Image (cartoon, rainbow, N blue to C red; front, side):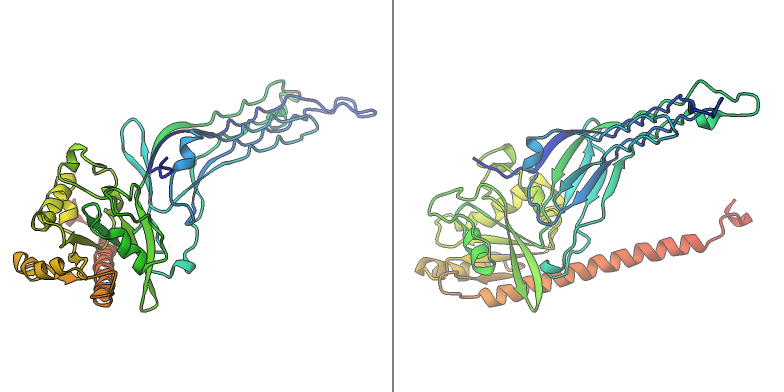
Length: 368
C-alpha cells in the first residue's frame, strides 16, 4: 500500500462569533443596576503552518473537514464569552493551496530557507487563512441617556467556509530522471542517507524519494522520481503524476543504463515525455549520466553515448566502483549555485523595478 499522498481535497471553516448577552445587574441593595450583558467570544481562525518534518499529505486523506471552534456567548455580570480555538493545519514545505472550484492558487508555501543546511531550516510562521467571526456586543454597549435599559444585543458574526485543493510539490535541488532500473535509487542511496527500495525488476520505486547530499558543507536535496516509460504522458507505467515534484529543481540528472540494448533511445524518449508534460522542464539545466560503467557493455557504449549527444554534459558513473561520482557530485553543486545566483539576480531586478516605480511621482502632469 502506497502511503505517499501529494493531493487532497479538504473543507475548512472558521468559527462563528459568540452572541452578545442581554442581562441586568441584580444585587441586593443595588436597585436598577443597569445593563450587564457581556460580549460574545471571537470565533476561531483557520491557520496553516509549514512543518519541515512533514513529507506527505497522507493525513489529509483521513481528515477532510477542518472547523475552528465557535466563540461562546457573553454572560451576565459583563463576563466575556470564551474565544473559539483555532484549527491548525500542518503542511509540508512546497504545499500549494488552490480554490477547489476555480483552481486559482491561494498560497504557495515555498521553503524560504532553501540553501541553508538542513539542520538550520525552521518552520514558517503560522498563516491565518480564514478569520473567525467577531463576537457580538452585549447590551452594556447600548446604554445611553435615552435608553438606560437596552434589551437587545448584537449577534456574533458568522465564520467563513472554503473548499480547498491541497497539492504537494516537493522541494528538491536536483531531480533524478530515468527509465525503471536505470540506477536512480542506487545513486540516491550512494550519495545520501536515504534508503530507497532497490531490486532487479522494474518500478521498484513507486513514490518519490528524497535524500540530502552534502558538498562543501552545503546540503543539496535530491529527488528520485519513479521510472518513466514511453507513453507515460498517456498514463503508461506510473504516468507523469510525480513529475510536478521536479518543477522547482535547479537541475535534472538524466540516468541512462548503458548496459540496456535500447540505451540509444532512452534520453530522447525521456526528453519527449517531459516536454509533453511541461515544456518548462526540458529547458532546465541538465546533465546526462551513463550508469553501470562497471559492466563491459556499458564501457563499450559510453564513447558512442558521448558522440550521440555532443551538446550535452555527459558523465560515466558506477555506483559499484565509485567511478565518476566525485565529479558528478561537484557538477551538481555548481549547477545549484548557478541556479540560485540567477534566481537572486532576477529577484534583485524585480526589487529594483519596484523601487523605481515607488520613486516616480505619477501625479506629475507628464503621467496624466
